[in-house]
Length: 509
Image 1 (cartoon, rainbow, N blue to C red):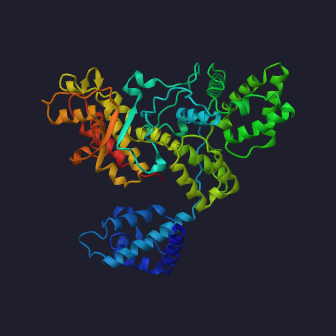
Image 2: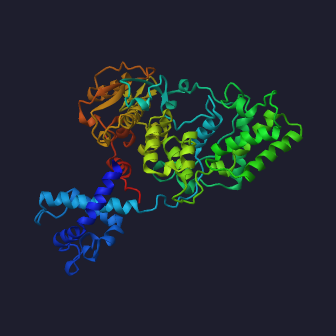
Image 3: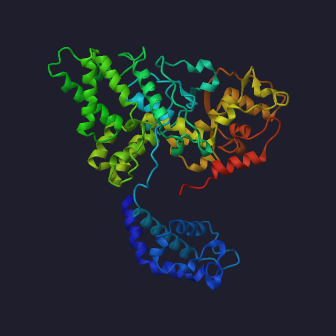
């Protein structure tokens, strides 16, 4: 249906190209080019044909926005007829779609490695771990009762969650013992941890990653109880009649294809098979030799770097990696790799099919664990310290209200995503999620004489209707208002800077 619409619009645009130029010349050049008069640094007199307009997507988008938002023509000029305005917008949008469809699918991407969050997820998925590799403080929400079910298209009205900042009791989860520290990631502008310049690789870092990989496979907990691929990769069946080298090669080919996210050349497999052979010749047990080669693979630049940076239109594997690390924060699954290899992923129907499938997968929770907290800069609320004398209710039983406040915008984000709600819900929502403790916090603000009864240990968040528009959406919820205030009073400049940078940020070029 989308392709049909695009084809129709392209044909429609070509049919009305002359009319587009005529309308722009008749209504716009008086202020944008005629007699040297150029408002807004936009000279439409230079546009002599449609190819010129299609070649400047930024200008084309500016024209569409100005007409769509009725900013042009200005108030002191005759307005466009309603029918003419709609027709012009349709033609300009068709031009934009045609221009975009002819652009390269990929733009050159600086090579960057996985960050801490992505590495954890990739290792967990590759090895089939049933526990965490190391603690993830960036994962602010812990799902206690399996509320996150994207395939259902609906969020529960009652959600039980936990969070690392909510206390040490929230940290009880199985993880590998003795794992080395992950090399520290630097935060880039706007608080994101995916900036290429900050995620490079040096010889010193290579050594650190090798130590990390060895500590993972060498952990005392790394065994059949925690490793999902233990039998199929790390154990040699005594009934196996084939040569060990043949078995190792078969296992490594499959493992490397998943780890390196693409076609694997024979010489690459041979190097790793040779490594295992050397270990076995030294008397190392089969399982230990496979642990060593697995550690080497998850320390390899081919594993750590997300893309090869070629940016070719025909690289389905790179597209698969982009999709999986964006939506799942991890490696592509086997189904996505097969679609990349067959070329299905490079077709619009195939891309749409797998995109929808990935949105319905529980691994989408990783996107919600990573993106919204960084986008909204919610880590700032953890360090918020309102004056305890002026706001004693904020520190209830030595507990900060901010620990519950941060859950509200995160659950709103997840609901908008899972239920496919309009993005306007981020600004003016009709609902929100509140715990009893958080509800008491709002009540205390409205009625200072009201006694606090909320229990900090109760982590049940209820979906409630927003009766006061000031308390809905992302901008005016308690978390944002608190973290953009000082200890004693509100800070309009700080709040305005947050609004400008987070909500009204310039779109990517």
